[in-house]
Length: 89
Image (tube, rainbow, N blue to C red; front, side, top):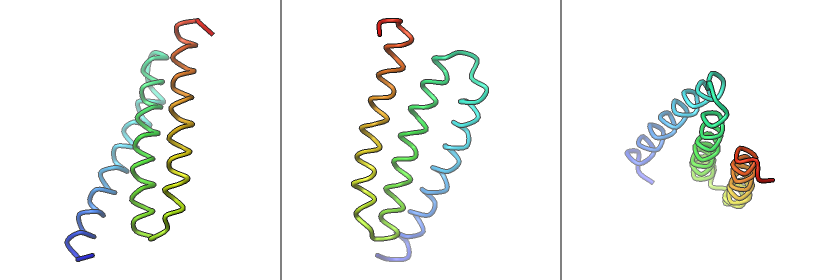
């Protein structure tokens, strides 16, 4: 890949890290359980994107398999938290 592509990917990684930091702050200080649940979902999706970038930089496609499993588990976790908030477990 060209230097321009790597530069843009590094910028994207920095923006993702900033998004993770800001979302983590919302997760910690979120006043309600709904705020924390949404922040958790955004944290998992952002970390999935960051793991995808790491797989691209390292040229290791096994990270993408881990990424898929992590995405499925985080989806199930958000569904369980949503059902818990509606008290229908």
